[in-house]
Image 1 (cartoon, each protein chain N blue to C red):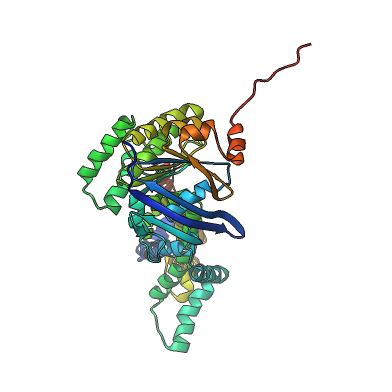
Image 2 (cartoon, rainbow over the protein chains, first blue to last red):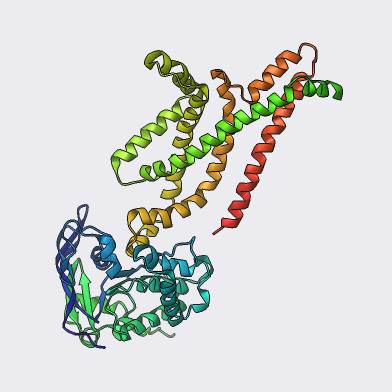
Length: 256
Length: 225
């Protein structure tokens, strides 16, 4: 499914300051239904903060965020309702350690959305099956590997039936061999037409999954392009420099 | 030698009175612990809340109670209230009130410690799935805090049981007071009276507190995560 023209999330001139430091200096971005947008950039460029602002985990200083035409930055926004529509997965895959996998997943659907247990359970089990964790439903988080925990965290967010999913460096604290299993799940979600906003340092993955790459630096969107153009011919000097970090020239040793 | 012990414990209502005293001790400490836990959990959550006034209020309360000797609090509520405000509380009510005030302060501080030791991400993950603040406390924070609280609560319970003898200063005949009375009466004729009676008290305290401590070890094992 390719993105259609309907804008689901509209960000206008978003600014965010921590104490005296400007983190976001006026971000404007439209995300269309079904679109996979990948945000990359050097650490400290504000990409994680941007995601956290979108579901109200960080208050913003100025600007507007609209979800399906509803202004989220207006006073009196009920974030509990909004967050059901904006799912988020974090770097540190914090599952609730006192609940087993299935109860981690069911907490939101049952307590927040008040759905009947049987229905929520059936959905949770089908998602667990799709991410290859059907047999771990009764395990506790401490019994899972990092990659498994992160897949559970993704399912936990998906079971709220969000309209858009935010992924904040979800593979950054995983061992290399576990990165793949998590990225595969995300690739499948992209194929299924889910609207996703992804912050990542996995460039090959970004190239494979993205409909559009957003390159951020110093709290600004410096460049946006489709992945082929961006990775082959980055326009801005800053993006070129950033992409060079991931290149290594062959080392030529002096042989005596 | 054993005869002297038997003669004390079979004389009059001595044994019955010791058990009545034990009943008083347990009544005061158990009711106070129960109330302290019930009041201390919400107080501790407020203490770790973002609202500055709440934090300040509970901080002051905690410091006040900590600095003040329990005995002073007992006298204050038993004698001073009646002479200044003509409020006459029964001694039992004063005892439970004072121990609950103390226990709530200690409990609130334990809860605050347990809650602030949880990783910040637990709040964020909870909010991210749409849990409201009361829901995230009920389903995520409190259940995890309870596991971390347990050693402290057990400690508080045994301290509460061990501190109840202070009530004898406001004329409540608790276990230690009863023992003292028995020793006073029988000690003249029986030189070993204090050994037998206080020895028994020693074992009674041990018999109450040791199972509590065993129970806590058991729960810690079951809840290990």
